[in-house]
Length: 190
Image 1 (spheres, rainbow, N blue to C red):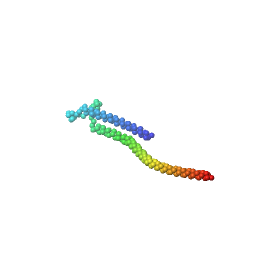
Image 2 (tube, rainbow, N blue to C red):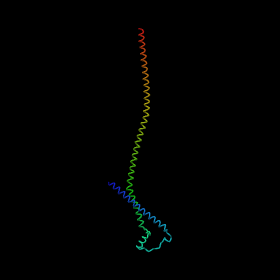
Image 3 (cartoon, one colour):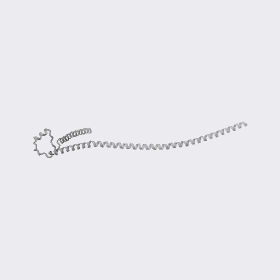
Image 4 (cartoon, helix red, strand yellow):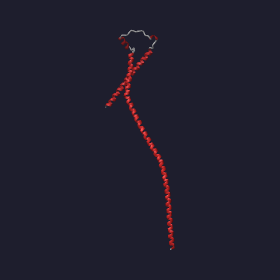
């Protein structure tokens, strides 16, 4: 709740500061435009370089000239005030920027660093997986070669066993046939 209130008050303060800056900017703009217009309307001439001394006007005459719209000449105090006002506005903007923008940029920088670390970890994991898959593929080729060699050896041994079994079977048949022939010869003699 306190954070919410703080956010509201900070937002309101920021809006008020922006309104002040805007209004002061408008005043400065009108001042600069009026001084530029006066400079264009009354360019200095040789005869105006050293104006004749005029008697000082009484306060009543000064207020009368101000009411009739004649611009009041600004002295050093007015210029100092404008520079002080400019410095105050610039300081306010700097303060608000530091107060609100610095934490935002710090938080954003921290989030970017975390994302970079996360992506570096993901990249390391992917590289590790890739190397293990490449190792498995390399071993797979070796395993396939080993299986082929084993299959050829088993086929050769199976062929030799079948040849032996066939030879043994043929010998049995020859012996059996020989015994039958002997027994048939004995029977024929009897």
